[in-house]
Structure formats: structure tokens, C-alpha cells
Amino acid sequence: MNARCLLITLLFILSACGDVTYRYYTRINDDGTVFKRVIAEGDSSQVYKNPFSFDINEGWNLSYDKMIDKENGDTIFMAIAEKTFESVGAVNQSLYLSNDSTHKDNIKSELKSSFAWFYNFHEYTETYLQRFPFHHLSIDDYLNEEEYAYLFAGDTSCVETMTDLEKEAFDEQGELKFWKFMTASLGIEYFNLLNNYASANGKGALGGGDSLFVMQIFESSIEDGPELEELCQLMDKRLGSSWVSEAYCDDYFAEFERQIDDEVLLLNETEYFAEAETPGLIYDTNAVSIEGSKAKWHFKRGNFAYRDYSLILKYRTTNYWAFVVVGVLVIILVLSFILKRKT
Image (cartoon, rainbow, N blue to C red; front, side):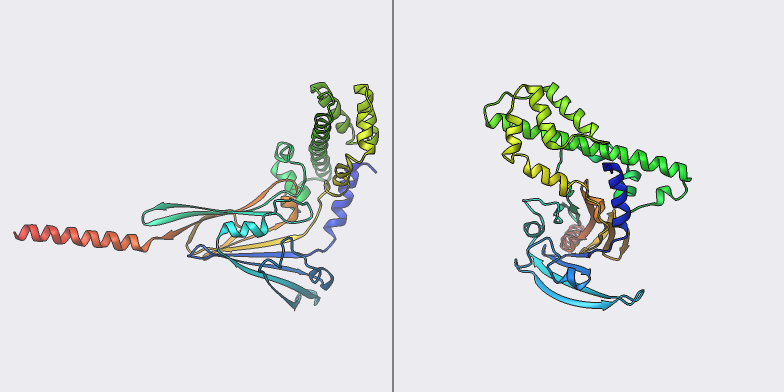
């Protein structure tokens, strides 16, 4: 089975598989503190073995609960982690991972504020960083919004009105574009590893022709290309050397091989529900719904498999003291004017 067929097979398998559901709740308080609640829902085997990406021993309050699913009568188990942080920066110390991993959610938050006398304007972003380990290329240069949503975010709305032939063509086009992104990313990573090894071991630097050779080999692997060991042998033949194969035998590419096996096909139907509550008026957001001062999102892990996915929330808080100051100034001016007229 070639890689593209494997992609479609995995899509069908994973779309039918259940997984942990995550619910992220954020409350931004007036004093700048931030309350976080993260709930992991699933069966007991998943929930009770620490389903969180962050270290719950760093001041998180952990509790467990369960409920009955009204639709099918199943018992849903919940692990609930709660913590109040002194600032958004402190949140990042817990949820943003400096040692990134495709097996963990890596979330980076930011709060920007600007003063405008009567009001303060704030922009809060919560970005779920892409899980794909190689950041050399942007998948947006390969897939359009509909193709990405269909392949990785479980959104089938774009094919609902298509005929079978149109849907088949759409599938093939999207798969081909994705594998071009994938093989190009792998080719760049492999070439960079080669250059790093050559630099560290006194070998001659590789040139543009060598880079083109590597990219062509990886592109051919869309259908059926060489294994990594064979590729190293081909590089030695091109360079008239043996150091590439020797590096392979010394396990220099072991981590790269592991990433190819474990971290490139990130197909997962895990669902996320996020909710953010602000101390002011929400005036702009990419949330799916707003209820008063709360914004809500619903997305899947595929949304941030191959690119960052950001929750954006803009809100306004009122500086009541500014109104008081202006009111006092107005009163003083009025009184001054009246006193001058009397004199």
C-alpha cells in the first residue's frame, strides 16, 4: 500500500474511533489574573492515566467526576484540572512547552492591551501550535482552506453538493498536494541533517545540486521511493564518499526515522471545546458563538496538526475613573465660568 492510500485508510479508521474530549475554560479577571479549567472526558482507562499535556503537579487542583451520556446511556468519566495564574505569562509557563512534542498539546497565549482614556482595548489569543515536527514550509502554500478542513478537520461540507466523480477528483487533488508538502518537508529536514553532519565532521558542504537531488528523491517517494538507508547510499554514490552511510549506521538519522514513523501522519478526531470569559465587552472574535461576555469555540485536533490554530478574542474594558476625572473637570470649569460672570 502506498502512502497516499494509507492516508485515506487512516482517515476512515480514525473518523470511526473515539478519543478523549477536551474542554478548555479561561476566565480573564479584572486584576490580570487568569483562571483555567481543563476537563478531559472519556472512558476510565483514558481519564485516570493523566490525559493532560501539562504537569498537573505544578499547582493544579485535580478532581474526578462522571456523568451519564443522555444519548446512549454510556458513562463518561472526567478529569478536571483547575488553577489560577497571576498573569497570561504565567499561563504560558505551564501550557507552552519549550521542548515541543507531537504527542502533547502546546498552547501559547498572549494578551495585548492599549489605553484609550475612557476605555482599554484588549486582544487575547490562544494559539494551539502545530503538531507536525518540521516547520520548514507552510501547508497553506499547498492546500486551500477547504482542502485542509476536509482532510484534517473533519469538515465535509465542501463535498456535500459534489457528484461522485467531482468528489473523487477533489480527494485525489487534495491528497497529492498534501504529499507534496509532506515529502518536501522531509527532504528539507534530511538535507539540513546532512549539512549539519558535514559541518560538524569536516566534510565538504553540500550544494544546490545536492539539495535538488534530495528533493527529487523524496518527491518520487509519493508513490514508491527508497528507504532512508538506500537514500544514504545514493547520496554516497553522488558524493563519491561513504560518510553518509556511516552516519546512518551510527544512528545519526535514528530520530529522523522515528519521526517519519510516528509523527508525520497526524490524523486524529479528538474534539476540543474552548470557552473564554472576559471582564469587558467582546467586540470581535473568531469564536463560533458568543454568550454575553463568553466566547465559545469547537474544533478538532486536526485543526492544528499541520499549522497553528488561534482563538482570537477582542474586548473592551471601561475606565470609570476617567469618567469621574472628566466629570470633575467639567464641574470645575462650569463653576469657574459662573464665578467669573458674577464678578
